[in-house]
Image (cartoon, rainbow, N blue to C red; front, side, top):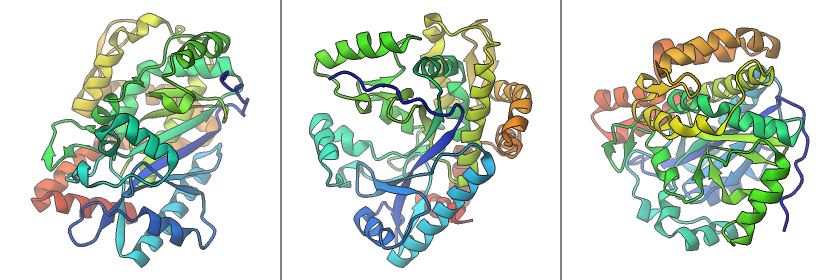
Length: 372
């Protein structure tokens, strides 16, 4: 059937989704407690939306629609507080982070929903290995063509969001030497990576999607695991490359950094996106995953090699007037502290491993940080 029409929404509105880890309190391994937690949370109003995810040891929370940093952060904090209180009643912990440092994928249980069972049947062991945790940010778009423009104009900034949010250095009990090992699991899926280059919704929906659907490979936009994808039912684009940060403050900062960046791009003062921009896309993405803020990226327009950290700091200076107009200067302060001083959460987790000497201590520290 044809792809549904793109639902126009207010430009630059935003919403956040966070996938979170459920952890037991005796050895800090993942806990298959999603059913119990969702049942408990369903007894009272929840300050957002909470839903199950692929396996029983994870949940997803979502905010409402926002325009400003302050109310977005306030809702994320209310969601966090409600989750912590619910987990305390069940004697489990909740934590951010893009991967759990030592969980064994074969022990995970698929959540009993038809779509999750269908995906498990299709992807086999990859479905359980997809017990990884990301932050998704939606940005409202006034038209379908605006959505495709932003999707491709953002391609050069994708390394910023990978490096800033990276919080998955450990996997299967070892330091992977990647700041974001989570994205290696996402890349295993056949429909991951980048969206096809087109700036026309008519061409995207009526040519590309129609051809893909005719192959039987896809039935809806949900079947695409692209780094950025359009969401026609919401009237948004969805950035999907971020690891789940360890704090909701970092999550709000990342979302509003994206909002300010989109406002800047919509002024159309930068060169228009083109297919050749993607010549360096995979390399830039690898550098951000592997080295985080210390990585190097290639500017797709000038072919200049630049530091990811320095490119973020230069971009922040450009975005100051946009953040002022959007009332999100505090968000840009969070991003600047991360890039210039504190480092990303992958760096923080490695420091906790040195401090505690065990991956169990890393998880305990992550759970404590989310609380505070």
